[in-house]
Length: 160
Image (cartoon, rainbow, N blue to C red):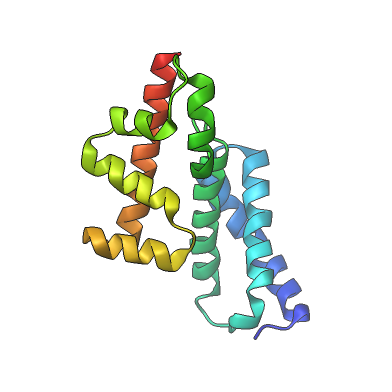
Protein backbone atom coordinates (compact mmCIF):
# COMPACT_ATOMS: atom_id res chain seq x y z
CA UNK A 1 0.00 0.00 0.00
CA UNK A 2 1.26 3.44 -0.90
CA UNK A 3 0.44 6.18 1.60
CA UNK A 4 -0.99 9.51 0.43
CA UNK A 5 2.21 11.39 1.23
CA UNK A 6 4.27 9.03 -0.90
CA UNK A 7 1.71 9.35 -3.71
CA UNK A 8 2.46 13.05 -3.92
CA UNK A 9 6.18 12.39 -4.22
CA UNK A 10 5.64 9.75 -6.91
CA UNK A 11 3.36 12.10 -8.84
CA UNK A 12 5.89 14.93 -8.67
CA UNK A 13 8.71 12.66 -9.76
CA UNK A 14 6.98 10.88 -12.65
CA UNK A 15 4.43 13.41 -13.92
CA UNK A 16 6.84 14.92 -16.50
CA UNK A 17 7.78 11.46 -17.83
CA UNK A 18 4.18 10.33 -18.16
CA UNK A 19 3.21 13.63 -19.76
CA UNK A 20 6.02 13.34 -22.35
CA UNK A 21 4.91 9.77 -23.09
CA UNK A 22 1.29 10.88 -23.60
CA UNK A 23 2.37 13.82 -25.74
CA UNK A 24 4.58 11.64 -27.91
CA UNK A 25 1.65 9.32 -28.61
CA UNK A 26 -1.18 11.85 -28.90
CA UNK A 27 0.65 14.83 -30.45
CA UNK A 28 -1.80 17.15 -28.66
CA UNK A 29 -0.86 19.07 -25.51
CA UNK A 30 -4.39 19.28 -24.10
CA UNK A 31 -5.07 15.60 -24.70
CA UNK A 32 -1.69 14.72 -23.19
CA UNK A 33 -2.48 16.72 -20.04
CA UNK A 34 -5.91 15.08 -19.79
CA UNK A 35 -4.49 11.59 -20.18
CA UNK A 36 -1.64 12.25 -17.76
CA UNK A 37 -4.07 13.48 -15.12
CA UNK A 38 -6.33 10.48 -15.72
CA UNK A 39 -3.31 8.18 -15.36
CA UNK A 40 -2.52 9.63 -11.96
CA UNK A 41 -6.18 9.41 -10.92
CA UNK A 42 -6.03 5.69 -11.68
CA UNK A 43 -2.77 5.50 -9.74
CA UNK A 44 -4.30 7.27 -6.75
CA UNK A 45 -7.40 5.04 -6.78
CA UNK A 46 -5.27 1.90 -6.91
CA UNK A 47 -2.57 3.02 -4.48
CA UNK A 48 -3.85 0.66 -1.78
CA UNK A 49 -3.07 -2.30 -4.09
CA UNK A 50 0.36 -1.07 -5.19
CA UNK A 51 3.80 -1.29 -3.65
CA UNK A 52 6.67 1.05 -4.34
CA UNK A 53 9.03 -0.77 -6.66
CA UNK A 54 11.57 -0.04 -9.36
CA UNK A 55 8.81 -0.83 -11.84
CA UNK A 56 6.55 2.08 -10.83
CA UNK A 57 7.33 4.09 -13.97
CA UNK A 58 6.61 1.04 -16.13
CA UNK A 59 3.26 0.59 -14.38
CA UNK A 60 2.46 4.27 -14.98
CA UNK A 61 3.40 4.02 -18.68
CA UNK A 62 1.25 0.91 -19.07
CA UNK A 63 -1.65 2.66 -17.35
CA UNK A 64 -1.12 5.75 -19.51
CA UNK A 65 -1.26 3.55 -22.60
CA UNK A 66 -4.62 2.18 -21.50
CA UNK A 67 -5.89 5.68 -20.70
CA UNK A 68 -4.78 6.88 -24.14
CA UNK A 69 -6.57 3.98 -25.80
CA UNK A 70 -9.78 4.84 -23.94
CA UNK A 71 -9.33 8.53 -24.75
CA UNK A 72 -8.99 7.78 -28.45
CA UNK A 73 -12.11 5.63 -28.38
CA UNK A 74 -14.14 8.33 -26.63
CA UNK A 75 -12.92 11.04 -28.98
CA UNK A 76 -13.12 9.13 -32.24
CA UNK A 77 -15.44 10.62 -34.85
CA UNK A 78 -17.11 7.23 -35.28
CA UNK A 79 -17.25 6.43 -31.57
CA UNK A 80 -20.62 5.15 -30.48
CA UNK A 81 -20.94 3.33 -27.16
CA UNK A 82 -21.76 -0.32 -27.71
CA UNK A 83 -24.99 -0.14 -25.73
CA UNK A 84 -26.15 2.76 -27.93
CA UNK A 85 -25.92 0.84 -31.21
CA UNK A 86 -29.48 -0.48 -30.93
CA UNK A 87 -30.71 3.04 -30.12
CA UNK A 88 -29.15 4.73 -33.16
CA UNK A 89 -30.19 2.20 -35.76
CA UNK A 90 -33.87 3.21 -36.00
CA UNK A 91 -32.93 6.92 -36.10
CA UNK A 92 -30.44 6.60 -38.93
CA UNK A 93 -31.88 3.72 -40.92
CA UNK A 94 -33.83 4.60 -44.02
CA UNK A 95 -36.67 2.29 -43.00
CA UNK A 96 -37.79 1.90 -39.42
CA UNK A 97 -37.21 -1.72 -38.60
CA UNK A 98 -36.01 -3.99 -35.85
CA UNK A 99 -32.40 -3.11 -34.91
CA UNK A 100 -31.53 -6.80 -34.67
CA UNK A 101 -32.61 -7.29 -38.29
CA UNK A 102 -30.30 -4.50 -39.39
CA UNK A 103 -27.45 -6.15 -37.46
CA UNK A 104 -28.25 -9.48 -39.10
CA UNK A 105 -28.35 -7.86 -42.54
CA UNK A 106 -25.03 -6.02 -42.32
CA UNK A 107 -23.03 -8.82 -40.62
CA UNK A 108 -22.65 -12.43 -41.63
CA UNK A 109 -24.78 -14.80 -39.55
CA UNK A 110 -22.04 -15.97 -37.16
CA UNK A 111 -20.82 -12.41 -36.49
CA UNK A 112 -24.40 -11.17 -36.04
CA UNK A 113 -25.14 -13.86 -33.48
CA UNK A 114 -21.91 -13.12 -31.62
CA UNK A 115 -22.68 -9.40 -31.57
CA UNK A 116 -26.25 -9.94 -30.36
CA UNK A 117 -25.09 -12.34 -27.66
CA UNK A 118 -22.49 -9.77 -26.59
CA UNK A 119 -25.20 -7.12 -26.25
CA UNK A 120 -26.95 -9.46 -23.81
CA UNK A 121 -23.82 -9.82 -21.63
CA UNK A 122 -24.24 -8.00 -18.36
CA UNK A 123 -20.86 -8.47 -16.75
CA UNK A 124 -17.31 -9.71 -17.00
CA UNK A 125 -18.30 -13.31 -16.23
CA UNK A 126 -20.81 -13.30 -19.10
CA UNK A 127 -18.14 -11.99 -21.47
CA UNK A 128 -15.66 -14.61 -20.32
CA UNK A 129 -18.27 -17.30 -20.89
CA UNK A 130 -19.05 -15.92 -24.35
CA UNK A 131 -15.36 -15.86 -25.27
CA UNK A 132 -15.03 -19.44 -24.08
CA UNK A 133 -18.12 -20.47 -26.07
CA UNK A 134 -16.54 -19.10 -29.25
CA UNK A 135 -13.10 -20.46 -28.38
CA UNK A 136 -11.36 -17.08 -28.22
CA UNK A 137 -9.68 -14.99 -25.55
CA UNK A 138 -11.57 -12.17 -23.88
CA UNK A 139 -9.15 -9.68 -25.45
CA UNK A 140 -9.86 -11.07 -28.92
CA UNK A 141 -13.59 -10.93 -28.16
CA UNK A 142 -13.33 -7.20 -27.36
CA UNK A 143 -11.34 -6.59 -30.55
CA UNK A 144 -13.84 -8.55 -32.64
CA UNK A 145 -16.81 -6.69 -31.13
CA UNK A 146 -15.09 -3.36 -31.78
CA UNK A 147 -14.59 -4.31 -35.45
CA UNK A 148 -18.19 -5.50 -35.78
CA UNK A 149 -19.44 -2.28 -34.22
CA UNK A 150 -17.40 -0.26 -36.73
CA UNK A 151 -18.87 -2.35 -39.55
CA UNK A 152 -22.40 -1.67 -38.28
CA UNK A 153 -21.68 2.06 -38.02
CA UNK A 154 -20.31 2.10 -41.60
CA UNK A 155 -23.44 0.29 -42.80
CA UNK A 156 -25.75 2.70 -40.97
CA UNK A 157 -23.85 5.72 -42.32
CA UNK A 158 -24.09 4.37 -45.86
CA UNK A 159 -27.88 4.09 -45.53
CA UNK A 160 -28.35 7.75 -44.61
